[in-house]
Image: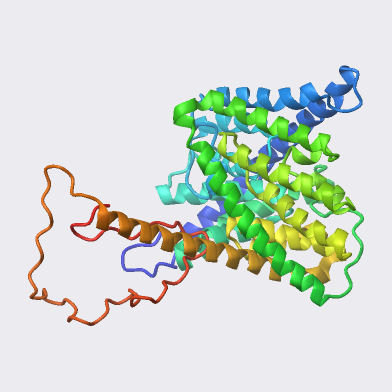
Length: 494
């Protein structure tokens, strides 16, 4: 780790080599855990929604099963969250990268996710995989003597290995970790080396090694997409619109989920989870009554994207979109455990699907545009959504990547504008409250300071550095930065 007086970006080569070797050691077990977790979720989902209806004598899940399974999932999540670790971090605030979790939290994280994902809740597997990978990294290297920062690096390497098996290789995993660690500055590059090594080792589980063909993990690319040949002005306009809409709806989902989560102190965790599961089941049944497929409303949505872009009906896409967005907000806010990325991607593709129906937009570029815009709006990342969109459309969509870039940037800028407006509104509200509120009992009004400036203070009329003049808006907050009001000045009410 860097010593006092060394540049922040310098890590001794011996320490970096040691961490890289530990990352390689972590990669294989973290990848195996991720593969086992994804396989378990897939098998349980298949049994609950395909095999169980057949045992009940139905060709498709009957209405009572659509209601009962999400509610049962809510009950199981409530029980899992009683274990150490609270079932992992809440998905409302996005992905949580970094940190060294406790190995004893593994059962709570795994059981809460298994009770969420296959039971129909609208969340993805990425957040539990990141947490489980970090726990594996911490546990496998528990024998090694490291500083707290070193353990965080190794835990991040475990997360990178788990993400590699889900996102189709070490590139997306590495870029997500890079964008998530921008705040670390130049130091993030050497600290990412163990994560990249771990992700590469884990991905050999998919690619195979030598004569071993690897494990049967499904790829991200959507099958059967037509080749996208040339960029049209119409496609660029659609990309901008989809990006802006994704930013607006992502903001709505976050606010609705936050408001719902605020009910937990009054209702209790268990009732809120049960009511959340019931609400998701009801939304799926309402969509079914309106002619949509309830299976497209449930789950994270990745497997339903090809059917969505091939729908051919504006009404069907609209019904699925509205129900999915509401179920997404409920799943985020009611206390379930999962990731926010894949439902956001489905949401973005749904917006682009309107153009597929109305203006004959290519489904290939629709998927690329929707994936980039949806992921950027929910994660506030820029490069990772573009790469992920390129992986989704594969070789037929190579020429669609520039359009996906435009959609991603539009979503990021739209989110930044909304953040900026929200920040200014909160500052005005704080100022109004401070100006009109009475002083608390037992306090005195602040005594005006002497007019003589302190040594080093600014002269009257000289603006403070970094503070804009009245009427000049402040710059927008950086993407992904936490929006907090400025600390109150002396004598002001917080």
